[in-house]
Length: 440
Image (tube, rainbow, N blue to C red; front, side):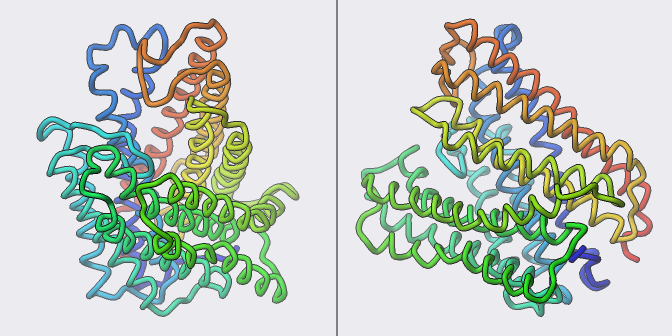
């Protein structure tokens, strides 16, 4: 196993970033209950708060993807560094935590006015936008700290971590560029779609690089010297498309379809570039029976299964329907499971043993099975034209097959929620029992 334990100077900071990610998942889970219920036939009709669907969707997505993923990025960047940089690391964590708190509270501070744009959906109200800005500022500082700190991770993983920090900074710095290039007449959903379109595609490279760091860094087998050099080259290959992003902005305006199509091509090339390392990760985790850390192994194998399933579903997209969320839920949840495995690996290395290891192993498989059912139901219903980003009668459930597909989605979503709750139970129970040891 490449990743062993963070250095003593970094342990408390790594734990704080993990706790921030766990807090985001707690509140994302609350909103997920509303989301799954509001789209399940036989249940949705009896819920009095269907108008809250889109507001809940915005906050759920941002907490469970943006904040959870980037908080675990903070864990990894801290893990791989020799020690925190107080001038950057402390304000980074506090800004990120304050921003998360504002996002959680924002639906209850005024009318949400939700916009379900791609990558970072938003509520058009000042509390939410302030929270998003604070969190982004925290991640900007953390990315700078990751590049400035001395790395102690093994060479190929250190390259993956630094490249992920660089792509994150590029993504954030493209936001003001997008803002300045959007025509004044563009507002509402169109504005935020264009604002986040380029940065969101670049941030995909960050997530790809870091999930590969986790899969390879926690694998039971380690490559030899030649393999390590090859890994470093493959990490560089994945990040290489980032140099194209500024060129896309320089090629013309960003309000036309050509801009969007170029970033779609950008994403496809980035995905293809990750294929060699993905195959290598599959080889590491499925070539033989994994001995030892069963919860971590279960999470990694489930993660790879879902990530591959999401990739396959991406080639099945035709039109605008729920096959699209089936695709990205597979990929996103694949990364989520990898980060769950990272949490299971990190806590014991911080002197906080998993107090419920058997439950942790079952949790990983419950979550995997639930999410496989969830995306299968969405893909099945999408084949019958069920619309995305809507609830209740607006979904277009006119055929029995579509109805049963969405019921499978609802059942799988319910099982996945149980798996998500169990993950929090395992981690919070370990943190509660080991709270006196975290500073050791």
